[in-house]
Amino acid sequence: MKIKHQLAVFNLLTRLVIIALLWFSLPVLVQKVVYYHIDKGILEKKQKFIDHLDNEEINAFLNRNDSTETYASFSTLHNEFVQLYRSQKVAKNKSQFVNERRIIEDEENDYRVLYYNFNYGGSNYVLEIGNSLAEINDLTFSIRLFTTGLLFFIILITLLADTFFIEYLLKPFYKIINIKIRHINDPNGFDYTPIKTHSTDFNELDTALNQMMFRINDLFQKEKQFIGNVSHELLTPISLLKNRFENLLQNESIDDEGIDKIVSSLRTLDLLKKVINNLLLISKIDNNQFAINERVSVAATIAEILEDYEDRIEEKELTISNEVHDGFTFTGNHTLIRIMINNLILNAIKYNVPKGSVTIKAAFLDDIYQLSISDTGKGMTEAQQAKIFERFTRINIEQEGQGLGLAIVESIAKFHHIDVKVKSEVDSGTTFIVDFPSDFKKKS
Image (cartoon, rainbow, N blue to C red):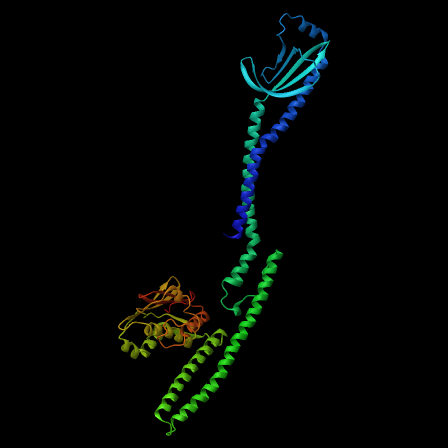
């Protein structure tokens, strides 16, 4: 999961936790606030009631025959009530709030009730003042619902804002990935231009990446130069040794056994010279020492290569199916492209089974010109396919070769921005697919 998605999910989860906490704590908070205001109002009514209570009202209450009768006053909506009655308990002038359900005029409701014990005229009384909680409960639920909806709306807005901000914040990071890493196959093609960003972290990342690639490119250039120099230096003594061995063959005093050893040594020198020349070729390609200014015809190149291998094809009794007859051309280096296609066709012949077949096809897929070379050989495992483009890798040690043919193919392909892929199954043959760049067009 990308970091921007992880941040968005984290922000969403934290907000959901906040909503859950508020959902459970909001009723308690609202209740405390509401009860505080209700209790304050009831205490004010109690004080007003006590302040206006006189002996005449008390005497009228005391002269009643039924001591259970009470003095009561109700609001028209049953939101409030006041009760006064005599008590046997000793008055302590203490107020106490409780929540009770009361039935008033056949209607039952929850009330917040104040019990106040006081002494007046030598007698103990209890004053009850109640305030209905029905509207308060409805109000609490409405506040809870409204607040939750508002929070969800805020979360949605902030989530969208976070998403766009994170996208903006990480934009330099993705630029670094796309421009400086993802599409760079060669240190020479690295772009050292600083990425514009307001983030110190990304500036440090960009700077560190530039410094690292500079060191890598320096080592890469030294390695290529070393390979080139060593290869050149080795060619001279090899040529001298070859000349000496060839001169020894002219010496009639050497017996047949000596001649065989000399011939074997010459073959070894030829093989060594071929390896060095191939390494020099790879080094020159990597150092961009070839020009790309020639028009190359794929069909004509394939026809020339097949003509060169007629003897080997007849020797293995192979069936060749060449279906490339279009006029596709592109600008490149003719020598290198011929070497690339030659190595692929040579592999299809060399590693094929006797009386097998080689099929060469080409087609336009959108703007891509795709060339495929298939054989009916033994095929390769996935592990072998992963290593075939490495230098000095030989899949079949029984066949002659230095393990540089496909390494050269890969270097030439990268030099021309060509994509080479392989598909193979054991005992089912191998197919190499060459995708030429989309900016190369079919010749009209």
